Length: 265
Ligand code: DGL
Image 1: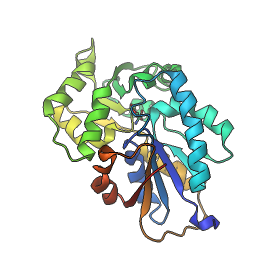
Image 2: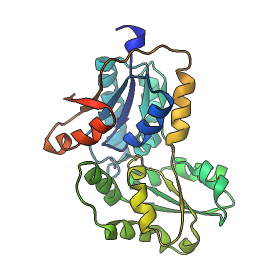
Image 3: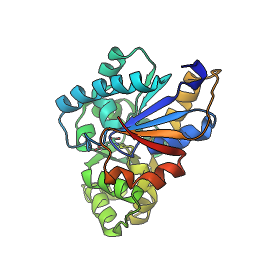
Image 4: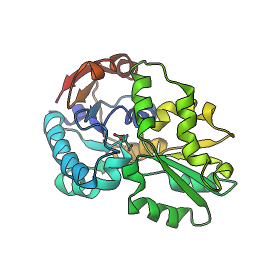
């Protein structure tokens, strides 16, 4: 494969990584992307550290062999906070991870009260405590883990109708905590959540600003690939570890993001 043909590979358990693809496309319109979703392992957020650590590096190894990416983006907070060091040591490629955007949130919070929405698996990582201590030491940082919100984002991209009450119930998990009424910034610390940001904003009991890692990751990818040449003919590929009707229902959402071919790993 010619160097100019080598894609950037985005990896997530499901469609969440598409929230990272969007700002990356805006910065790199000529780049070839492969979108890989571990639908056979979805969801990650309710799995143990051991299960994720065993699964992700091996899977990325197979994907790297098949698609020869020039760079891999782990577009998943859960996989990144648990498996990033293992992936980096297993693969001889630049690997960009996704970590909760607590630093930019702390930079803009006026009430000094930040909500962090993520998966349960992400929010229990010491990595998150460390980010809060380093970048938001003067803030109250309230966390809420939601597997339901991951499912809502998947359903939205399959074109299914979502109940606004479901979003209010998720946000109650943050705003009903002691001190939660003061939250003015929410970190979307799961890549699925920016996909339902409009629904979350509508359901929020007070105006809030949402932040996520997407724009920062896009800048990082642009920096790491600066000066490289690209050849992109036709649409891009989305690949699933299990390809059933559930994944096929995502075809319109994928095509709208230029992933016109869907295949199984
Ligand atoms: N999108 C993933 C994340 O950023 C996890 C979703 C899941 O599989 O639970 O954490």
